[in-house]
Image 1 (cartoon, helix red, strand yellow):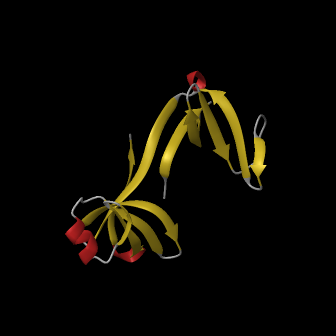
Image 2 (tube, one colour):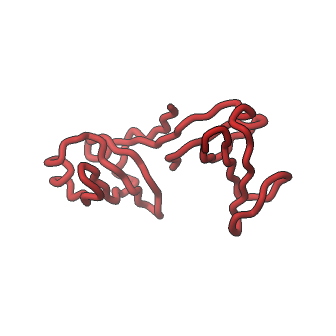
Image 3 (cartoon, helix red, strand yellow):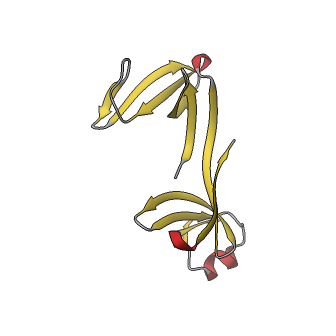
Length: 120
């Protein structure tokens, strides 16, 4: 499940972190120009002008008929954040108040519908 920035550079898509006029490209294997920042995590900084496309990717779904963003996946569960904006519904669903107006919980993946990736 993806939730974050991605960019296309030299024809390949990477998980990225934009930073002003530069973009940090991340990948899991060594490659020319990439430096290991921790085991299994390699980074390369390139000028944003060299990036062919930059987008924010978010995975959305519906659970029990309500709209959510998928934040993570673990075994047969999805970590979801409610986007319906109605706190009585979030509380009735037993979601945790993560922050003011932000409700999250774990949903059984088998109960989630309309799973899709959104690009902005």
